[in-house]
Image: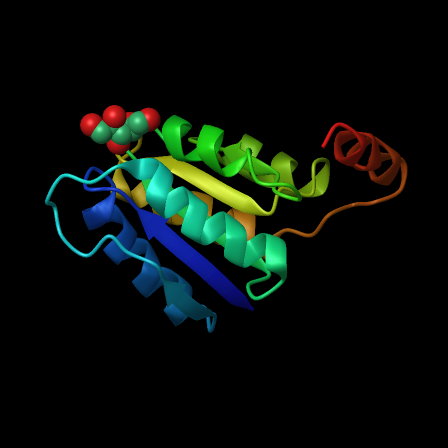
Length: 144
Ligand code: RB5
């Protein structure tokens, strides 16, 4: 799967680690930055990843900031994006099964790196259940 990835300075180190995990799982990664711990603005990286997913150039996306919240709020401003902030395994799985989330956001200051790796493995290995959830996701699109 082609996955677009991005982070701000707070998420940079964890992003590097999660990119390695995704590559080990066989995914093709498009890393949209940031590439150091120098201070940057998280909406810039959320926009880059969200537009790539919305256009279909990437199937899914991953964003990391301090909490996962800022990048999630920003990404959800882009039509077609359903970004889910998941700092636990249950929501990582359910956001795919029920919400067809197409971007995972994680907080580097919230979860340890081991849990973050498991969250990423879970999210990208879980499929949308469709069925009754398809109608509900369709109603989300009507809000755009
Ligand atoms: C950066 O200090 C921090 O505000 C950012 O990483 C994120 O947590 C915002 O939601």
